[in-house]
Image (cartoon, rainbow, N blue to C red):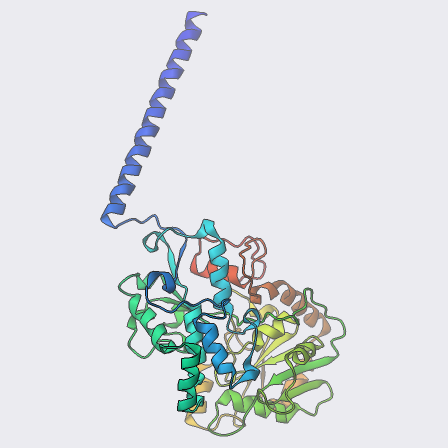
Length: 451
């Protein structure tokens, strides 16, 4: 081999050896540094989400599994249904099952799970089963005391569900960092905002409505109610929508009821006789109430559907009308909440109508407070009308071209309101958006419907 070529190769080998030595030294020093940080409790290399299961972390709690009929929440629910059988629903279709779907999807995503709370970006309190038991137990007060005691003994319920939920919340601050804790309260039930669990104000909260959250607005995300049912079409069709606007739901004009309940009753009474509208107001379980399947069919034959506040500024109606291809119309004040309003662009598929004259449903200081606080989350009003008589003419004035644009946008955004038990960032559903909001490092590969 020529001497010059040999020398060149020798120099290259020496340089390569030097680079490899430096690389080994860097890796060794970085590993040592990370070990020291872990030992000092100062590790900043957090990643993923930790699912904190109270049944595992807190010995002594009654076993609770939504899918086991002999465990805590199903037993409590079964007891309640003995007196209120019309509330029965299989769990996958239960309107407050969103937290269960979220927990289930996370537990299947092993690559996203942190090994411990201190190594996680976010810690989810997986309390949906105990929360549901506490929520159902609120109906215990409707039972005669002696009957309730007997039924509890027969069912083996030896502890109060609300006390169990409270004990879980009591245990969190000593074990987890509140600022990295995620709570999920899917029902209109306040689980601990009575001042005894002040740490909850620092946590992130997902809730079916803001009233269920103890945290400030900027730490609370209103998520969709669960609208899964056999009636949900796999694919939307916008043909044969012969009704202009539909509203189906309860309403009560008594002065002690909320401004939302009075608004529902007022609209039904004012617009119920119009030929191109379908207004059906009746209480749950009352004579004349439509079945769920009948109501969903009406949504699939209507262009617009009213989404109105009730006793609270939320309901699963917002989810159901979207899943069935009916363009949501928010009317107020007071307004119904808009799930995922921070990321979903409602202006592309919704109508927001502000009514100037609210005297027909706002008559007391409480009503005035509700009208002031329950503001539009779906964006600024697309239309302002003087009074309710202008509602139908306003909807009739929206062009066919604009309706088609909105329907196309609704078709794209629909998945954001559908809860699934698996994550899929390629075709994100409600669970993917929930995880993305809590864990920004979880990227959505399809963000066509995101602001």
